[in-house]
Length: 480
Image 1 (cartoon, one colour):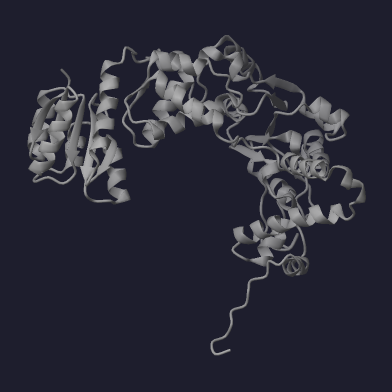
Image 2: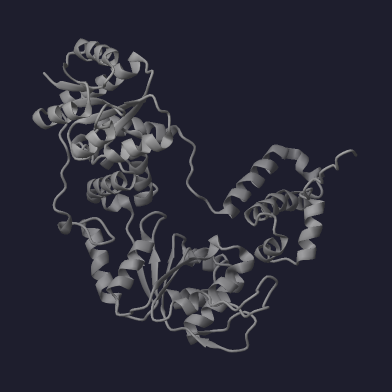
């Protein structure tokens, strides 16, 4: 018979919990203070323990810490009448699986006990991966054949100064591969990552090439760009396929001549790093569609390296899932956990369209929402079902989202489309207002900074603020 420990200085609480515990087929041991509870924990193995946070002598959290609750097979439930977030956080860090506030409903206790009973009687056994050094580097987890092929190629290109183009779907780990190439290479400088589309359009050139004082509104001092910061290092250009055409021309010069000119300067600077670019787009198609320069593609495509999708390395899913579980248990101060072998089978059978990133996000969510120390097939299947009915939160390019909304609008117009006029101004205004408002919010209303980020003159911004109805409402004077 599985045993449950009940530690509380309130006799009535001990009596109520004992009735609930024995009524569900468990044996119950009682402790009236922390010292007694710790003694029982050292003597017996418990399936679960209900521990009050405030007891004479030794408090409940100290009991958990001294019993090494984070490593113990016992599931600890902390009880308290104090409804404070910091107390809940301390309990979780000490190894508590659940935080119960008094007065509590007996049904809540019964639900927890049912979970304990289910875990205790589960035929599922923990999944234990092989020794980490057999399947992981400092950055990459896996031992599949396709991943080993990638690392063989990394070994060949790491010391080269030639430009490398990483190709692959979103979420496959292109930046991690780029960092591995940098780590294995001979360059001693920094790894500098830049996601050009994530930088406001008006600041992309300044961010990359740097600028002189007074080069544009708001440039109050000279600043080095990412190219200068990469001295004897690696510049990683993520999402290179979404780079604007005018900036592509300037990047081409960097690749061809190994030089660049900061904004507002007449002096050419040498680029002293190596470039690794990455994209999930078909650049050959982008060239054919006129969205990407052919000469830039040729310069980037010197050493192409395709990063495999997760569907090509299914055998790595168990190792990745366990790695992420241990990572987030540590980061979130949760007790160490493991997947059952059956849970791992469930994870392996799923088509992870978002690749490693989607798997990592899922395991992180499971770490937060689950309470057992063994995550079973049902836990995984239930959370997977929730994820499937949830709205798709995967990031899409802004241009794609806007295009989808416009197409929906035009479809609703139907035959009335031919009689419409002024659609251009309508949509420009609908996009412009939230853009200006968001930048003003981000700069806390600083119009000089906002104008610089938007790439427009301050007077133009002031005019737009008025036209778009974004001017702050003036307060009425008292007595008016």
